[in-house]
Amino acid sequence: QILSQLIVNEELEPLIHTCVQKAWSNIHRFVPIAIKHLEDARLQQLLNQWLLAENKRLPFQVIASEVWRNINLGTQHQLQLHTKLDRIDSDQQGRHIILDYKSGKTSAGKTLGERPDEPQIPAYYLAETQQNKEVHALAFAQVRSGDMGFHGFGQEDDILPRVNAPKGKRTEPQDWDELTAQWQETLDRLADD
Image 1 (tube, one colour):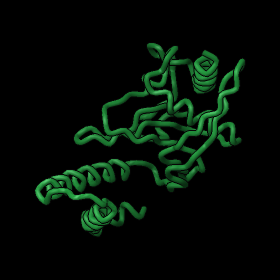
Image 2: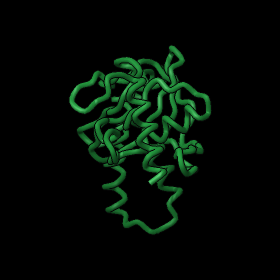
Image 3: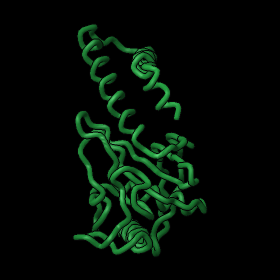
């Protein structure tokens, strides 16, 4: 709701500008002024596009960002990993949503298979469930100019825009329980290898 108010009151772009300038103040190396101006414009446009995409979601609250979790994997050999989740949200129904930011093109299918190309979403799921937290949706938050959006899976359809429950299409598992069991099995097997 705060985001919607900023947009309606035309306060979003000035706020983005202020945040980008603050980020520059944390960079302690020389950046040529021409490069800085180009990067300012690019970042402001990218952030504006992303926040407009976020505004299409059902109301939510950011619970945590860049939070560290431990995950224990393996059935034969115990492997402990330390992972950093980009963001954890909660929607109005109290559903737990995990987001992993990506600046390149991605897809939910990259979390599947014998050797997933993008195993972090399954790892984040397992890290949260090992903390006795129920996860309702996990997605890549694709922050890519002209191609903003969410790519992932949920316990049910549309917890996030265009993020659906698995339905057994192509190489997808039949449902959420099969998906999460597959993630557990795959990561345990990879840890044992």
